[in-house]
Length: 230
Image 1: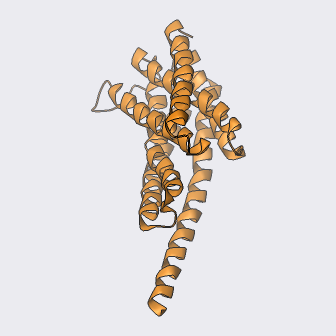
Image 2: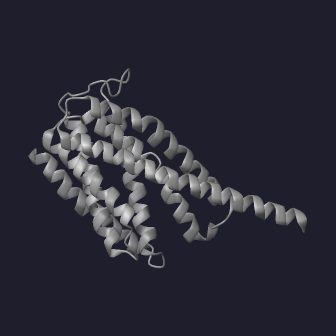
Image 3: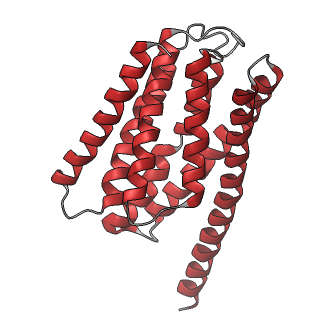
């Protein structure tokens, strides 16, 4: 692995941790999870921006299948790897440990680590980071609104629906295409396995999100019916 990649990962872990500590100081009355989600939102915004900036040919952003990863792509992967390492550790210091989230982090860390080690499939992996992080701000907004007192409000429902729509488009429409390209290319088995694993995890979360949206819409419908009846 290139020296600058290792340095980026180390500096990144320290930076995300420092950002979290600063936010805890700025918002002492807010929960551990609230501050961590602010850091996560910052990472998602940065990751999506860096992914866009790393695109070399806008006519076909992921056409260079099988080519050596560019320094810009390696940088994007290193930044996200540093965040995932921080977040995995941070989640285990929080109020609760979620097995689903832990598995997702481990699959992502191994997958990105393999991409950095082999220095291949940069275009596909950066595209994967884009589709996995594009819905993250809305994901965290849902929980931030709840802590700010907007639970079960139209604003919170709108954030839920927006998150579900972006997640479904990115992970279940664009995601399978990238997974197919990864599995079809001449890549190491580990990279293929991690690509498939991430897509399966995305499908698992997709079905959970669909159930959540159905439940919330049903609850909203019943609330309107009771209001009309009174």
